[in-house]
Image (cartoon, rainbow, N blue to C red; front, side):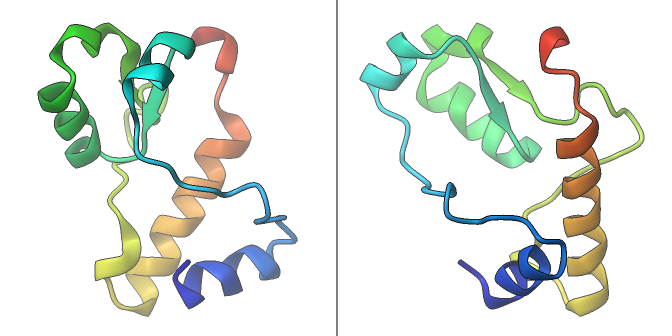
Length: 99
């Protein structure tokens, strides 16, 4: 995990122990109903890699039209923090019943 992400999570009292990234595989595609992509690049890559399952992929920000998330690792400190705050906002306010 990026050291800046770890610092952000600690500053916001967020337990990061649950974060265990995995590559999506066929077993997961059959098991899970939805996959939420944080950014459009990842969403596009999922649609290309697994075209039969496009109906399962959706942007995390569908309910937040004014927020465009990007992977923050490539940004300098200020923009990194802004993106992390946007991710925090979305994760705290998303209505999972509407996903």
